Image (tube, rainbow, N blue to C red; front, side):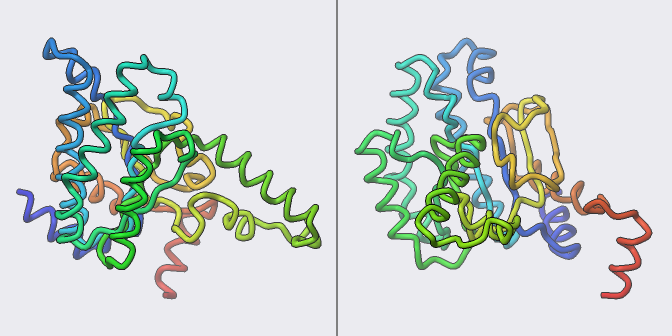
Length: 255
């Protein structure tokens, strides 16, 4: 089944950028009578599969909501375990990421991360910078409201310094340059696992016209086929961007 779906979605034309809210690790563990950290460990294996799937079909950008600003409010033991798990995974998976040609980028308030963890992440970013495969964007200590406020402050600072002469020239394209996702296309498709149907402070600006796909599976149970099915579902939608369906079809026929 997987190879059939892969060929179908590749032939139909892929979205340029898929973002995923990886939800349900803790609940997956609790259902099995395990501590939450075991769900996170299983979730790392799912990340590996999904990155490989993205590479296999030629996806250009994949963003994973890895750790939110709000996640710092979780019990200290869980946060420490997550940071340790992340550091271990980076060291262990670097050779495979290099083999697959994956390029790593990070968005978020990274100064909040433990120094040792950020050192490993920075090294991974540097080592994969020249890779030309899928760009994997990790949202770490990320919050969309924080990002938008940060961008607004940067705009104010540049205006005060005379680098931005006229605020009337500040349009959406210009504002994008102040976001942590500058240079990255907005997600075409956002997938959220675990059955929850909300954005949870993730890419609020960037998802203005993103298509959403919600799946009841917890993240550790998410398979390559689930990603492919989400993309196929996306391909069967009509994206109108405020226009009528007739306008969109006329434009497509013209192209």
